[in-house]
Amino acid sequence: MKYWERFTVEGLVCVVTGAASGIGLAYCEVMAEAGARVVLLDIDAVQLQAQVARLTAAGFNVRSEVVDATDRAAMYQCFERIGQYYGRLDIVFANAGIDAGPGFLDTDGQRCAEGALENLEEHDWDKVLATNLTAVFTTLRAAVRLMKPQGHGRVIVTTSNAAVLNEAIVGTPYMPAKAGAAALVRQAAMELARYGINVNAIAPGPFVTNIAGGRLRNAADRAAFAQRVPQHRIADTEEIKGLALFLASPASSYVTGAQIVIDGGQMLGRVD
Picture 1: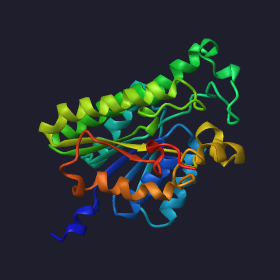
Picture 2 (picture 1 turned 120 degrees about the horizontal axis):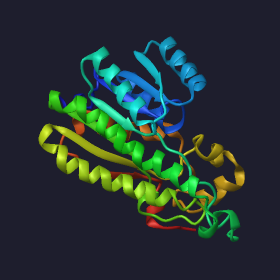
Picture 3 (picture 1 turned 45 degrees about the vertical axis):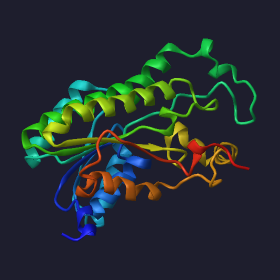
Picture 4 (picture 1 turned 30 degrees about the vertical axis):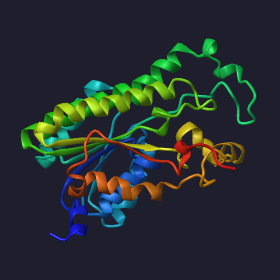
């Protein structure tokens, strides 16, 4: 086999959570373009239907399920249906996530009362942890039930460089939730290696998505984040596709427990 042929996912079954927009949709697109059979999972029925129609019209093999990633029973049932329909599950992107509201500083560097620790709403904390951490556990658990018997699988979790890099202009719950997801990736990778299941994380920096209400489409927010990136720009979701394909394919056969950062050098520190 030529080395580039190891990047194939032709005919494999791939599930993506948070699939109707942003990074999740980019995962769906690259997997479908590379020949995988893709199941899009999202809570947004309208956007999900629109994207499935678009991808189907382009000739790709895609299906969808409307499901809330924080609803454990619904997720388990959803994965059971997928397993029954395809008879296998090869790749899962645990991608569903939400933002955590304002940080304790605004984009001008001024203190933001709404984001102050003592003012954080407990239900906001609970919602962020439920979506960005507990739902990853649920997705992993559901996927492993199908992957273990077949003796192989790839699970790719969307964490964030915020799992390591704290951000004053990002809501406080986001960082511990993503750090927890990164730790879960490492723990699951240790346990599941003997079953042929690789578990890795993609840790994006600032990308233009719908998260936080499309915050990075706002000029002030975009500039505030871009100035923290050595490349001095915000990424487009097209730029995450190559990494996603690598981790989903046989090319990454000896990679497990890794968190690969894709952030234009933001982790290196600000460069003026």
